[in-house]
Structure formats: C-alpha cells, structure tokens
Amino acid sequence: MASGAQERVADAHEESGHGVSALVDGARVLVGNAKLLAKHGVPVPDQAQQPAGTLLHVSRGGAYLGSLVVADSLKPDARQAVADLRAAGVSRTVMLSGDREQVAAAVAEDLGLDQYFAQLLPDQKVEHVERLLEGKPQGSTLAFVGDGINDAPVLMRADVGIAMGALGSDAAIEAADVVLMDDAPSKIAAAIRVARKTMGIVWQNIVFAIGVKVLIMVLAAVGIANLWLAVFGDVGVAVIAILNAMRAMRAAR
Image (cartoon, rainbow, N blue to C red; front, side, top):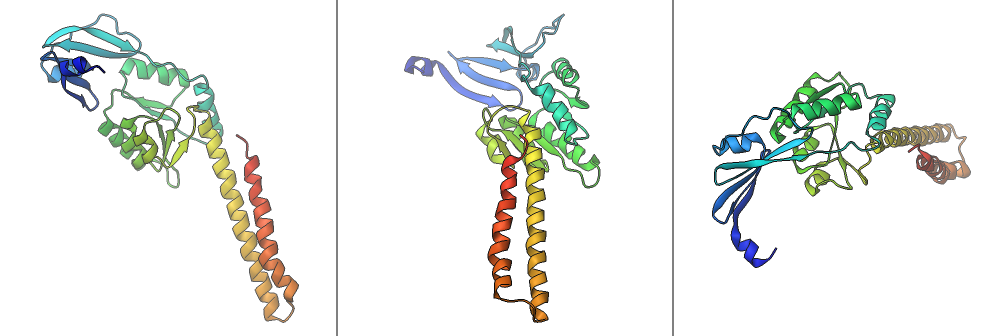
C-alpha cells in the first residue's frame, strides 16, 4: 500500500464475528453484517428479496451506502464427501455456519445434512459443540471440520479437530488434531479409513508380539526354548511386525 493511502486509513480493526471498521479520511467506514451497523447506530434498510449469499453492508460516516454479496460455491466433491462419511459409519452430520439462515438452509438441503445452525459467532459455535458433546451417544466421537480462524476454538473443543490445510488459516491448523493437506472434503472419509486400518494393524502387531514373547517365556520355563527360538522372538517378531505395518500403505484412499 502506498504511503499516501496509509495516511488516509487509521484505526483499522476487526470486530469479531461482525465485520471490519476503519477511519478513512476521518470518516468511520464499516463493512460487515447488520449487527455491526446496528452496533454503531447505522440503520439498515429492509430488502424485499434476500440474495443467495453472505450479505455485507457498507456505511461511511454514519450513512448507509449499500451492500455487497459474497457467495461461496460448494466443493465439487462435497456431496460425495457426505455420502462417504455416512458409508464410513458417521451417524449424524451437523453444519455450524456464520452465514445467514437462507444460505445455510440451502447448503444443508443440497448436501443432505441432518441439521444446521446459522448466523453463529465463534463463541456460539463452541456453545453448540458443547451441546452436541453432551448429547452424543456413549462411546461415540465428535469430529469438527473447519478451515477459518473463527473455527480454531471449536477445533480445540471437539473430540477430533480436522483442519483443511490447503486453504486453512494458521490458527485452525495449529488447533486441529488432524490436518488434511488439500481442501477436498472427500479426503475426510479417506482419512477415517486409513486411521481405522492403521489402528487395526497396530493392535495386530501388539497382540502378536506379546503373544509370541509370552509363549517363548513359557517354553523357556519348562526347558524347551533354545537360542534360535529366542532370536526369532526378538528379530523375527520385529521383522514380521514391520512387514505387517507396511499394509497401511495400501489403505483405500
């Protein structure tokens, strides 16, 4: 930004969950939702037809100037991602959105989600996750997927936080337990499949290693075990466990 432009702008800051505010040429400029303008005493005119997208209102010096519409498009694999999650055993899908009710409802219906909550501030998302955690079935796990800075508190509160690493904010990536290195929602179900297969292999190796060593100890106690059996119990078990672990590389993605 040129020095002249910098001199024109002062006191620029974000008002969490509402928008941005700054002094431009000495006049207060607001860009955000209707709550932001109402907070500063700027009336927002009623609109006969609500556009499909996130509506940003703009004011300057206490006067309403107009509005901007920012609309997100669904990822090409979003519908398939939801179907894959259900096939992987996910029993309930819920969307927590900061968008308007109309936009959130359209997305939820298009994706076939079980439930949605709209017009949420970051702290309200945490409150909804708290309720979901309290009401979840015994033994189940609640996972939250997000990529924005406002999602960081929820990613930390959920049982498993999953951040979309390609376009995700640094705060979301640091708060998450799992980071996907691209922004394809279909990779979430793939990550679940890989994790389940990996944990299955881990338990196989644990049971196999402990079982062989206990067997050798019993044989040694009755005087049957020899040196070669001891070598197998050490080196042989390790080699077999490594070969078995390599099966995780062929997990379906």
